[in-house]
Length: 314
Image (cartoon, rainbow, N blue to C red; front, side, top):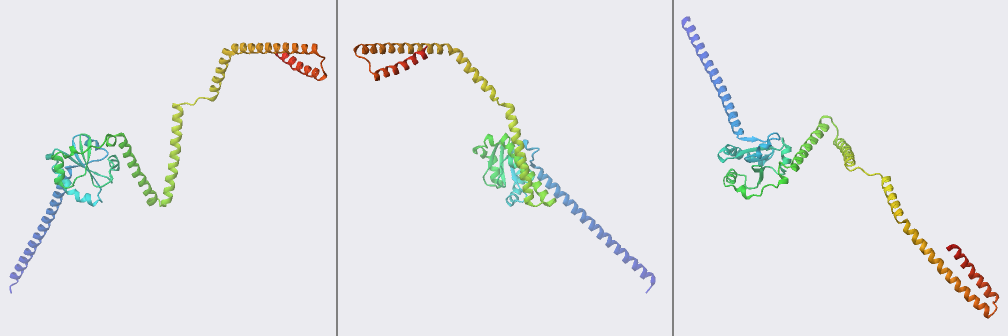
């Protein structure tokens, strides 16, 4: 066999292998580019779908006070919420045609809103119309939700009372309490997991802080009440009583003295009359018969108290 023919065949084989390698590289690069393109397209579609449903937070929740809204409260771990997610995204895409806005609230990330709306079950759906909120309690299928909006079935549902409205002062306080509970739980987790403090130690710390805060608040309330309604000193009240008594005695002292003088005069006159009558009777008896020793003693005894009465009257 000619060496020239063998070398030419080897070169041809190398060229073929190089072409095959180039084709494989091209196929791999094209498949990788297709995969990247599909991933980006999927993300873009997901973002487009998600943008139709507004994520409501504590910062932008006042937007739902205007216009017509359908709001869903959910949690990522809730199976019923996961089952409703597809229909809710579809409702968000149809929101413009229905003339409504669609929102969702993650209660694990927004505990304040769950307290503001008093959410106790998941998922919970609310219909909002110009600040009036109604709880949706019908079927959660996309058809029933669309009929609820299109046929205005929400008009037959009683709205949430004013004191339970999310914009009321009471519900604002409830939202703060829910946020505080979440903060306390986070602190408890930090104390037990990060610092290694046992659970009972964390409870003792919270109990001490609660007692201290209660004492501090009680002291503040007492100081505020004392500033608004100051207590009156007792000696001032005593002085007023004494002054009143003195005023009364000065006004009535003359009348009282006149009455006492008049009564003393009457007593003196009655005693004198009784004394005269007794002396006359004794004189008559002495004229008739001589007095005995017993009668003399009795007369002496009678005269002594009379004399005492007369001296007292004078």
